[in-house]
Length: 230
Image (cartoon, rainbow, N blue to C red; front, side, top):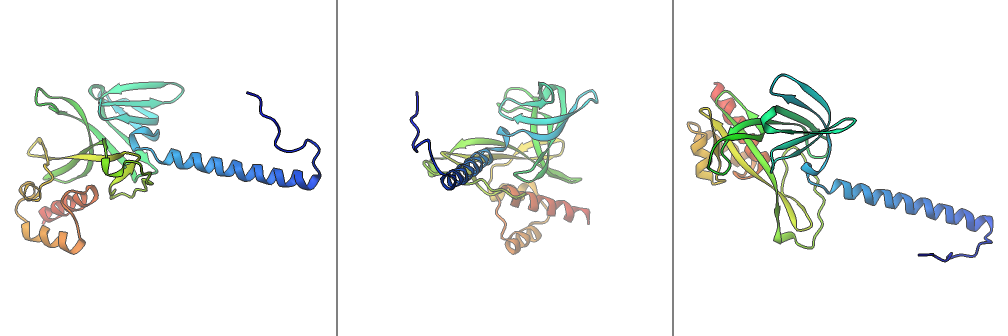
């Protein structure tokens, strides 16, 4: 398709200067728009600086992208290599957009109730008695259909949404050498963290913490592990 010029070819220097400024402004706006679009991606859609640690002691450094649904992790250097949870001990990424260093371990677990296979879990916090793990996924969010919300995150991640989708989590407690899924019911949280009900209840009230939010669960579990040190 051939576009016709919108302005006469013979323009004076003043008009040339105005056009140049307009083009620069448009270019900056365009780059800014692309930057915003790049930021409005879920963490698993982004390449992060990181390291992958193999089951036989190998270490690979480069850009890392993960796929928890299929339990895969990719490494980008001169080429792109793909690893499964079976040949990775753990990997770590520096997530500049959503909250610093994050670490994912390959652990045996039965996702579908059949038999255990290596599965990637993100470790949120751990102590001598219990660790809090999670697996993120992208879910359809009918409440936000037709909206575009920035996913601005901090280490305590609130709800993150994009057009028709949201970032969701399944949470697990590693306790007594077993990974157990958390139902997001408050009574079950206290069952996982026994012996300090009054202290935990007070801690949650004072800090306005919820029993089903990523950052709040992290703080509650870390507090429980501190109580158990005493």
